[in-house]
Image 1 (cartoon, rainbow, N blue to C red):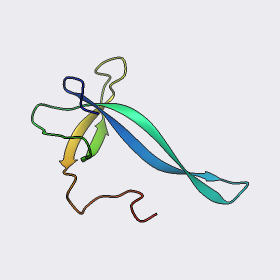
Image 2: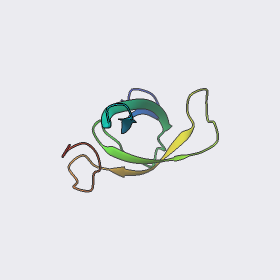
Image 3: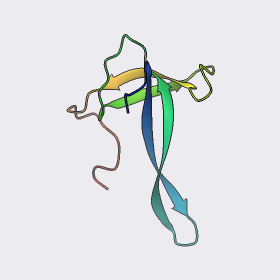
Image 4: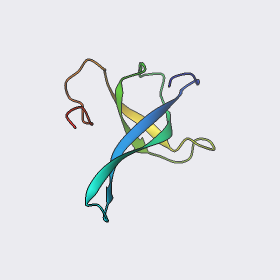
Amino acid sequence: STKMNRTIIIRRDYLHFIKKYQRYEKRHKNIAVHLSPAFRCKEGDTVIVGQCRPLSKTVRFNVLKVIPAGSKAVKGFSSY
């Protein structure tokens, strides 16, 4: 989501292992990230973030790199 000024909400998808069933389940977290005015980011783009000092009540990460949505270098659940 890019509705805030200089802040975006990213969705971090990951797999959580359930020991009882010996299987993985999909989970996600929403993280508020500071977006410098130097970057142009649209919804659907993949971003690389890094941890930094607290910038506000909820923002603790910075955008380091933006990978446009049409690009091939994307990790995720696309082949899952």
